[in-house]
Amino acid sequence: TLEVGVSLKGTEVKSIRDGKLNMRDGYIRATKDGRGCLLYNVHIGKHSMCGEYFQHEERRIRALLMHKEEARRWKKKTEAAGMTIVPLKAYFNNNNKVKFQIGLCRGKNTRDKRQTIKEREAKRE
Image (cartoon, one colour):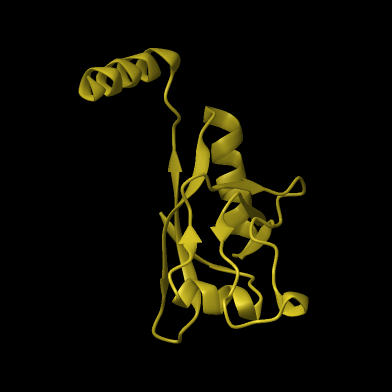
């Protein structure tokens, strides 16, 4: 796991403070040149006390703030073993900066997915 910063707009920070952050479908990809990483599919709701002109896009691609060497290291890990980088947790640090804890994970294969679907259907009945 690694703690990284994220490039946000003002209304995004205010919305995160209000608890309007959803990381359920989020994932991270390294850029092609390996100099940084981008955060995809993380939903930050619109801020309630702001006009439409100053609002942000809810699912825009956000740049992560990390060193080049760390980004290259994570890119090599994802390319070699078919792993994915995912955001695990978002929080404010002591300096009131939004930080994400990211980790490397392996996706489920089809056999595991079938087992999960069976368990879900049995639970539903």
